[in-house]
Amino acid sequence: MKGRFNINDKAGIENFIRKVFDERLNNAPEVLDLVLDDMADDMQTRSMIYLTNNMSVITGTLRSSIATLKEPLKKTIGTNVEYAPYVEYGTSPHEINASVLIKTPDDAIGKWVYIKDHPGSIDKPYIRPAFNEVINNFEDYVKNYYP
Image 1: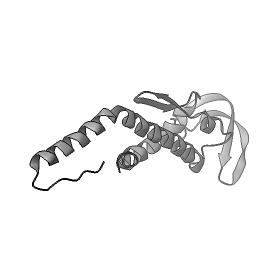
Image 2: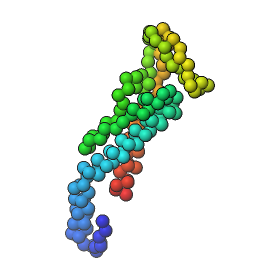
Image 3: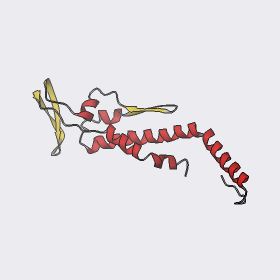
């Protein structure tokens, strides 16, 4: 919005500022929803990249299951894969009675190994770092709509 007025016209300046402020407030919920949509999409993408980069992807099930539910002024990013929290937060040592597919940097395919006493697994966060990156760049998302 552009306006021309005399620098000495105090009332004109105040009216201009009030008009700009009112226009931005009137569309604030819609703009905020667009900003949150952009942030949610970016967080979903970054989460998938973190899963790939931290060697958590064996079959791709977890990565491909990350989805975003978009409601007005509310965005939910997550997965319905039952082992997702164990990848994000790791596990302590525990007993299991099953074969486990183990993938190492030297073995991209992995090997099935029967394990009874599992030593636990380190955390390989993918949601938390993506969330932190997006939140820390909030101003950049807003600038797209209010340059």
